[in-house]
Length: 99
Image 1 (tube, rainbow, N blue to C red):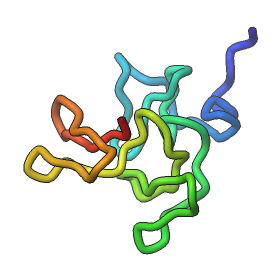
Image 2 (image 1 turned 60 degrees about the horizontal axis):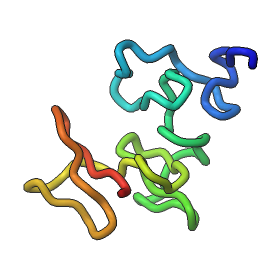
Image 3 (image 1 turned 90 degrees about the vertical axis):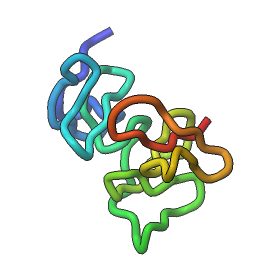
Image 4 (image 1 turned 120 degrees about the vertical axis):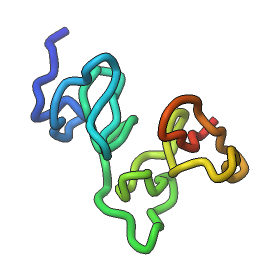
């Protein structure tokens, strides 16, 4: 099983770097291969338009359309709450995740 390189590490999209202790710079997510990508799962369709994306995709906290799935992030928790179907994650910069 060959190791993916930065050019294809994000399910075919380019990664910016490898994750450091599971963390990435702002606007990037550590994917299952331990690379920093625009989306935690799959590849991005591009920027959200007025906060919206095609069916099956969610507008991520970095304003990119990413595949909806477990672990997808939609934005910050508001007073510890998220929209229905999302859960407020733990830690600093708490975000709403699809459950």
